[in-house]
Length: 112
Length: 113
Image (cartoon, rainbow over all chains, first blue to last red; front, side, top):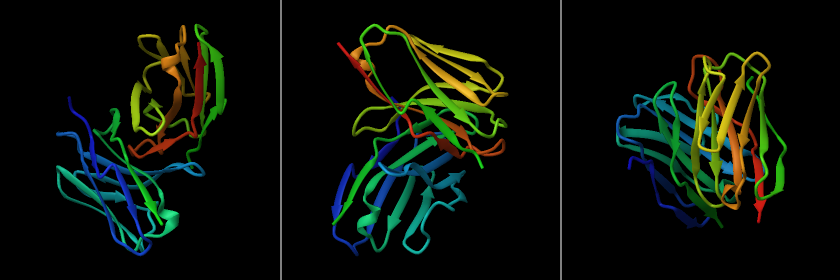
């Protein structure tokens, strides 16, 4: 059963700490997305990769967020330093151009 | 800039009712539209994908239609069940040459027995 896997599922951290979230896309998918979901803003796109190359990260605060794909089986989203306003659920999704996007279960981040 | 709106924001119906969820988008130059379901505390589950060349797509009790020219899609749920209770989201690509998805704010559905 192919699925997008995200780790960790939950993370509580103190303000100022580094947070790294990981995503394993579905094998064979060449597009990877990072979304953030909050009650106020809904789903916001943070970053978007195709064939491991970043195509759009305009939704991401560049001073503290970074997204990478070290290889085709791993995408990472890093926040350094974390702030309370970063508390949200972070979703990774993968797909092929023009077809369905499949989402992971998300990482619920709480920054205290 | 692509914007997606979903109406109603919330819906509460008794079991057995047929219901329609609406999605509208501002830029009709899309190549597909996707409907998702999200249960509380969970990720998004893809329900239906309609390509721009299609007008309808069906899966079980779900039927989604797409009218590109008017910028609208509807998700029809037949004979609703309590297990259908969830938030339903539609998403379209930001433009014709990207697969970057823009989401609506969702319709929160509650089906009571």
